[in-house]
Structures are given as C-alpha cells and as structure tokens.
Image (cartoon, rainbow, N blue to C red):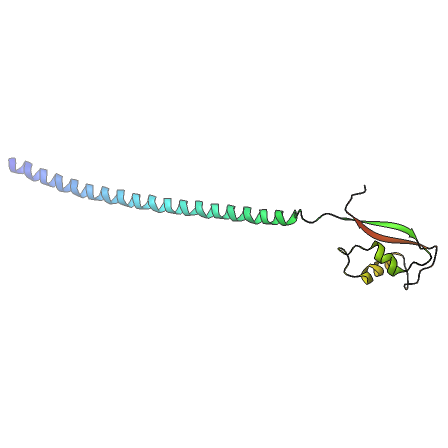
Length: 140
C-alpha cells in the first residue's frame, strides 16, 4: 500500500511538473507578448510626438514668414493731378514713383500711360492725369 501511495505521489508530482512547465511557458509567452505590445505602443507614442513637434515647427515657420514685422505695409492709392507747364511723364514719375514697388521709371510711366489711355508719352499743359502712389498710412 505504501508503495502504491509513493507511485501515486510520483505520478502526481510528474503531472504537477508538466502542469507547472506549461503554466510557466504560458506565463513567459504572455510576458513576451505584453513586452512587444508595450514596445509597439511606445514606438507609436514617440512617432506621434515627433509628428506633432514637426507639424508645430512647420506651422510656426509659415506663420512667422507671413508676419514679417520688418516690412511695413504700404497701400496703393490713385491721385488726379493737373499737368503743369513743364511737366513730362518722366518728371511726374520721379516725383510720385515709389522705388520699392517699381523696378524702373519706365515701368511706372507705362502704368500711368495705361491708366490714362495714352498712346505715347505726350502730355499737355492743363490735362488731368490719374497717377498711382503708395503710402504707409491707411486712408479708409
């Protein structure tokens, strides 16, 4: 009888060892799976954070370029003038042209000619001309 009990005990111990081994493997597999999930979640978090930081830097770069305070805003206006005795389009251009907005006097004269429907640069004393000019003040 004692022998039978010892054998039953051994079988039960062997069975427990097999169960323990299976359980340990399952626990190990679960631990590895959780670690992989944690790594994956951490990587997603880091990538999302990088995307947000990159996006905010890009957005701020665009906004800072759009609001360059070093350049003053100027407004384009039109003025009607009477041609004086010795006026030429060239002298009018020298007086009213803004060099920040026109590359040359010729460009300004061409705009004045187009606005006033002039065929050439001939203007006469007493005529009215509409000329463009720029100002930093807003006239509303």
